[in-house]
Length: 178
Image 1 (tube, rainbow, N blue to C red):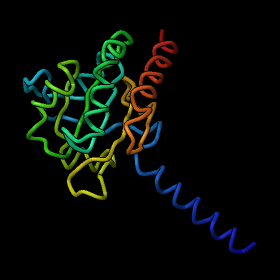
Image 2 (cartoon, rainbow, N blue to C red):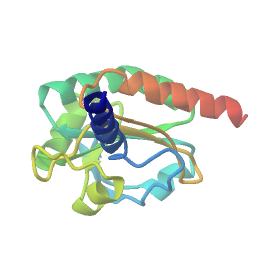
Image 3 (cartoon, rainbow, N blue to C red):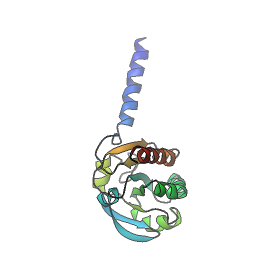
Image 4 (cartoon, helix red, strand yellow):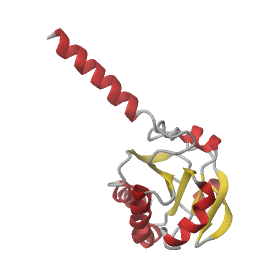
């Protein structure tokens, strides 16, 4: 019985630790100003400016042209029009191989949405450092309301569920703020 309680406590600690890695719902999203690319063209992205237009779907991915990140970019590209229809700005950020974001924005994001460089300050501020690879980001998706508060978060290395979860949160936000 004692052993079971100890195992349960360790599991709870592990699960709690994993769940608390990303910023929680209700937290204020740290500001972001960074270089991004859409359709291969570089531009300056500022979160504050994007939030003036509506909610922002901000997803972090480990590195351009890796298998899971390519799958995720394709899925977000397929849903980009739906995000736009619901008033949301979509952007992906990575800390890995940022020199390839322009190319990735064109080929894998299919010119549908921008991807940018997650600076060390952004990685730290959003708590998305990939433990297994220094400088890279984990796979975490946020929906940020125009007031700067996080209204949805999903942090898991599988790309499954990120598009569906963020789109559902955007739709719910839109319905609640008509």
